[in-house]
Every structure is written in structure tokens, then in C-alpha cells.
Length: 349
Image (cartoon, rainbow, N blue to C red; front, side):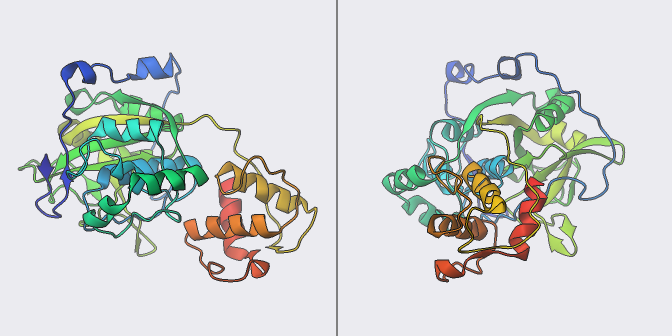
């Protein structure tokens, strides 16, 4: 177990036997010859996918947070790290190991942050969630993956393979071993002692770039103990990992494959939607999207009627995406207003 001496968090060492580790999936097994040749080019700053800001303060849940970030990239919902971290094989020890993240996401899954909090809470609080409570929550809303596989790490890191995984719509979780001098907005190899280990995630088809001519990956970090990239003066929680750093400091690279789901809905919303609308084509599109991201049951037809079931789903989706205007309001007052329409069109147009 390696402790971050600056933040107090841990990453657990993988205690599996060598025979068990030999069973880990490889890219050849999962991709089956699929080839997406990455096109490396210098991207303008933030000309890539930006996700929610996460904060694991007072816990060692970076592995769970990294898995939750992958789910967010797949389903466009802020996912909870709690089911992942609470199911870790080394409970009640701190931290978890890399393969365990993928195994839990495949076999158990997670839910949204709106249903089960995981941000800004202590290790003790995370450990206090019971497996029965988690199982009950997952019955209502669950996100899983179909597979995970390992890519070369350290000196054997293959930047093209990492970029290929991202271009295919997979997420990539990195186990880094570094120090505070290196771990800044742009993470470059500077040498020095390793003072902490940490999990971070790259997710998004655009989240690889050339940086000063060097192949690099844009990652999301759930620990903001050091400077992260800022957009309009606000932290994004993102960093740029350069190729040399990845070759020198990354101890594990694991790609996460989303579950096979129906095609992502596409629709451009041109008006606001209010409770009481009936047989409305925009409401039909809204209901299709809410089903796609897990806030409405797929067994319910998309009627175009904006009534109680749709209103409840809308509120849950809004809260998960940082909009709580109607969190405590009567259902009859719920609407899809300017903030919601702007986000829906950004994600689904």
C-alpha cells in the first residue's frame, strides 16, 4: 500500500497471485483486430471533452472516483464512486487496486451521485454505506461496463494504443506514481522521489493531443491538492499527461469498455418544456434521452406527455447535472428551461 504523504490517501497494492494477474484481458482479446488510427494534432486549449469537477477530499477513493469518471463519459451522468469503492476487495483497508475497479464496474456497476453521494465525504462515511443499501439503489439505477483490458505501461507504454482506446469511445484509467513537483497543470517528468500514487481517468474521443509536439493525454483528477487546468478562471480538474511522464511514472494503464446500449438519441430542442404538455414531439425526444441515461424505465412508452413520471426523471437528471432549481418544488412546476435545453442540445444535437 502506497500512501500519498501530501494528501494522506492510499492506493492499495494488487494482492492477487501471478496466476490471477495472468488472466487479465489484453487489447488483442477485447478489440479483436479493431483499428482506429489516432490522428495526433495540437489541439487548442479545451478543444476536448470537459466533465464535472470531482473532489475526493478526506478519503482514499481515487480508484472509485476514476471508475465513476469513466461512467460519466459513457452515460453523461455524474456517477457515484461509492458503490465501486465500497465493494473493493481490500475493504476496510484504504485505497484499491486497478483491476478491481474494472471488475466491480463489470459485475456490480454504480449509480448516479444524485442517488448516492461520494464527493467531499470522509473515508469513514464511504465505509458506512452498507452493501444492502447499495444493492437497493442499484435496482433503481445502475451503470455497468462490458469489459476492461490492460495496455502497456511504463517504458512499454504505447501512446497510439491509448489514443486508439479513447477514439473508440473507451476510457483509460492510469495508475501514476509521482510527486508534487511534477503533478501540476501540465504533468512532465522531472525526476525526484515518488511521494504518492494515484488513479486518474482519460475519457472522451477528443482527449488526446500534441503538447509542444509531444504526444499527451488529457486526464481528469478527483484530487485537487495541486494546480489543475482552469477555464474562464475556474478549475476543470483536468491535467495534461505528457508521453515522457507516462513512460516514467505510470505503473498501470487499463481501458474501460462501455456496455452495449442502443444508439445515443439525437434531437435539437427549440423550446422550453413545461409540466402538462401532451403528445409533444420534443417531450418524446426528452423521454427517449431520459431512458437512455437511466432516469426513466425503458418499459414505459415515450408518450410525449410531460406528467409526474417525466417530471421526476427530469428533476433527477437536472440535479445530477448541477441544476437543483426544482429539487424541492412541486412536480407541477417542473420545466426544462434554458440551462437544461442548453445542456441537452450540447449533448444530443
